[in-house]
Image (cartoon, rainbow, N blue to C red; front, side, top):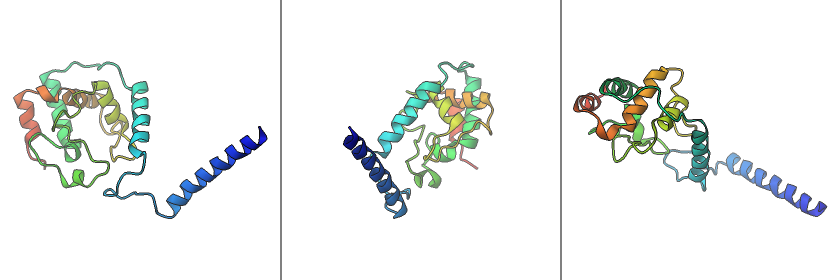
Amino acid sequence: MRPFLLGFITAFVVLIGGAIALCALGLVPVATKAPAFPFEKLMTGIALHARIDKEAPKSAPISPSPDVYASGASTYRMHCAVCHGSPGQPESAIASGMYPPVPQLFKGKGVTDDTPGETYWKVNNGIRLTGMPGFRDSLTDQQIWQVSLLLANADKLPPSVLTTLQAPLP
């Protein structure tokens, strides 16, 4: 049993030492245009989804409505559109230079297949190592829910809200 335990500890130390050496020698891809590190997407995805499943609210405290969408659209334009885009607008220079690539929320399905609670969690808390900030200290809970409901229903917004979202950014 003792040789097995010694072998296990040695392997663990070698693995940790190797990881530190990779970092210290500058061999870990950290530039936004560098290829992904092996298993990077898998590991971060597992951790993110487990945390969201554990903590995301199961229901929204407000109901979707044209007024909620309009308020959410104003907040989205001010705080989110520069990275996540707007309907009919090209991707910004900021978004095109980020890694991992920033989801363009009005192209394709966006996050309409996510629950409003999942989107709320992401906006409220942010996501490490992605450039996605947490907005809990800069937006109200009401504003975060409005944006979350806007995005969950992005495929069925009224024309007036789409017009607000399509206006060029300042």
